[in-house]
Image (cartoon, rainbow, N blue to C red; front, side):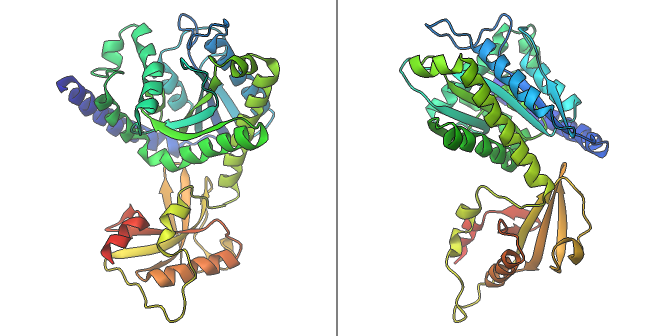
Amino acid sequence: MRTNFKFIFVLIAVIFTSNLTSVQAFQNSNDKFVVVLDAGHGGKDPGKPSKAGYKEKDIALKIVLAVGKALEKNKDIKVVYTRKKDVFVDLFVRGRIANKANADLFISVHCNAHTSQAYGAETYVLGVHRNQTNFNVAKAENEVIFLEENHEKNYEGFDPSSPESAIGLTLMQEEFLDQSIQLAKNIQDNFTYKLKRKNRGVKQAGFIVLHQTVMPSVLVETGFITNTREGKYLNSKKGQTELAASIEKAVLKYKSVLEQNVGEELFEEAENNIASNNTEASEPELIYKDVIFKVQIAASSRKLMPKSYNFKGLENISREQVNKLYKYFYGNTSNYNEAKRLQEKAEQKGYSGCFIVAYKDGNRINLSDLEKQQ
């Protein structure tokens, strides 16, 4: 336990220095949208075992190369690979490659495995394990560090078998969580609705390879290599081509959302469930002391002046920078009913994806927490 706390302490120090570095990097942002593609495993690390003889490291690489080939057709996208052939790459090196490239996205591709005939695709973002299954998936991927030289030094105090070790991993990626989940959802939607694959959902777990990066990052488990039918699909040219196309289109949708100033929030329905019905004129005004409500109408990689002419005539626009992403808000009020009216007005102007956010003492809070104050 003492070792685990030591790891978390070291990690916090790393986060601090990484944030300083990332600020400087963002000031020299790339002209192109940079996507780092990471084919899981490789070389002496074959990945998940399969009785049929399929190799995860080979499948992951073929999918990644296909994704990259498709994305490279876009002149404004730069693709960086952590590996393009069958070689072993340390997990911390994969993150270093992404950070050095000042990437906008990091995508790690893998195959899942189980002793049963489980099947389906799932995409992970970095977070605390929600259940034992998520922990076991992350544990299996993280144990690759034991194949690395000097892993004791590079991952000081980290134990893949310890849930406590994973707690510290979530700190660095927390500020990118919304964007990571958005990309993960895009990927899962394409797998589910276009390829008709079983949707195992967007999940959180403590993957080391994700914690090493300082940008929105996801780990894709494309399917179960141990399932008789799905393993065959994963190992086929058809399967690899289809999965790669789904990931590519998910990236393009994510990029389009940023560039078109369309505000999206995966949790907007959950956060806005305080008042899902329209406010009646006779309802009492809900005033929250020390709380400020705003309506987020857009999120973009472009820095725009918060003027009405940039936002379809809406006044009282504010801007907040979160690393490379600029978020734009409409209004500023402590009256929740007024915030809903502002949201309706923004929707009428064409911001159909807008949603209400709340701040207390300058910090973002969940709207659901305000129910407790009533």
